[in-house]
Image (tube, rainbow, N blue to C red; front, side, top):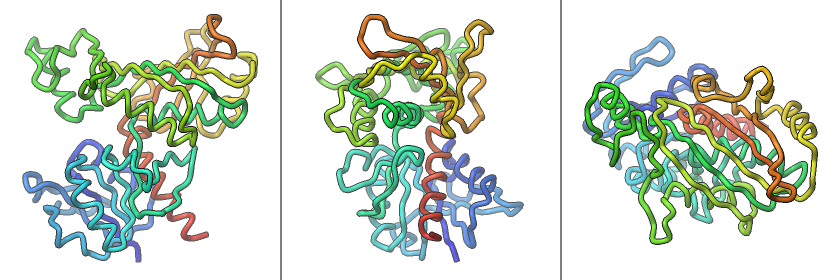
Length: 328
C-alpha cells in the first residue's frame, strides 16, 4: 500500500505534480491533497475521480504517508516537512528551504542519487536543474573547472502572479508582482539583492550547482533575468573544461546522451527555444561553440519547461527513483 500526499495541490506546480503522477502511472493506493485554508475545499481530478483538497494542519501530518510532494513555499515547508519526516514519510520539497542544508540531499536524478540521511529531499532551483543535466554530461567526459550562467526566466517561475503581470502589461496595465513592467521588457532582478550585488536567485544557482555536482570549490557565477515569456526557461552557459574537445566532440557526446536532446543545426535555424520546449519534458541543448577568449571554454544554450523538468517533473522523477530503489 502506497500513500502519497501532495501539499500545495492547487498551485501551478502542485497541479503539474498531480498530472504527472497520473501520466507516469505512479503506483498509488491512496492520494491525499493539501493546500492552505484559503484553497481548501477545491476539487481536483485524478484518474477519473474527484478529490477534495484539505487544509494542511499539524495533526494531518500523522497520516501514515509514505511520500509527500511539497510545493507550498518555504514557510510552509519549514513548518510541515519535519513533521511529515518525524512521522516516517519521505518528503520531496520544491521550495528553497532545505536546499543548502548539508544534511539534506539536493537531487536531480540524471546527476545524483539520494542518500536518505534525512527523509527530506530538496528539489533544486528550476534554472539549476536544467543546467546541471548537460553539465553532468560534460563533467563525466572532460571535467569542469568553471561555469558562468546567464538565465532568461519565464514569468511562470513567479507563479500565477508573474503570469498575471505579463497579461496586465499586454492589456496596458501596470505591474503588481514585479517592480517594473515585464511586458516588452527584461528585468535583471529575480529575488532580493544581497550586499554584494548578487540576487538570491543567482546565489542559489551558484551554490546548488556546486552541491549537486559535488564540487564545493568550483568557480561558478550567474546573472538571472526575468523575460516576457510565459513558460520555459533558457540559460546561456559558458563552461570551462579540463581539456579541449572539438565542437563536434561535444555535439556527438550530447547526441549520444539519454538525458538531453541536441538541437544544433544553425544553418537550418535549428536551436533550442523557449516556445518549443514549453510543455515538453526534455532538456534541450544547442548553439554549441568555442569561446575564443578563454582556453578550454565553450558556449551552450539550454532550454527546458520550468514547471516540468524545472519543478514538478524533477520531483516526480525523484519519487520514481526512490520507488525503484525500494523495489530493488
